[in-house]
Length: 207
Image (cartoon, rainbow, N blue to C red; front, side, top):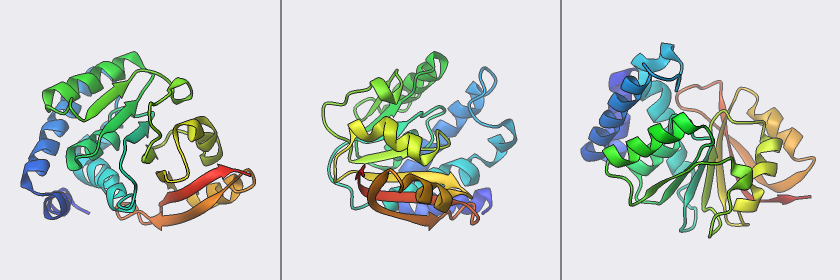
């Protein structure tokens, strides 16, 4: 997918105004890249295809999630959490323990006028206790699936939808996690990296 194709993919599904807001986020990411390593420098010229569409493709996978917050674990540069907040009207919580990244995410929320629905939680997910259980859990390149389920299960209930980009070993991670966890798990192919998979899970609970 080229950058032009990625722009078109976003525009066709979410509209011009949200595409424009993503463009402002891209500017903030590129500017901050001079001060801290948010994303690989080699991907700065392919933000839309490598990061934005890669994040946005999670949204339809969680289309049947109940009302409630989308919790993005280890949000880092804000991927996929900021993208979800821009493209949806759902409340999004970015859980990020690193102070410099927290400051960047807070600045992004303010600059893009997203503070009414985008919250930055400056902590590890293990110590975060949300008032209400998450409707959606996302995490991009944070931990192996088994470890991720262990660290986040306290934030969820049986209706939570998990959308987790996991790379080429997605199915293997599911098989390993199913020794300790039960629920409905399946792997969706990524539209940006066909060799990679996205784990979608519902009804997750310990065995």
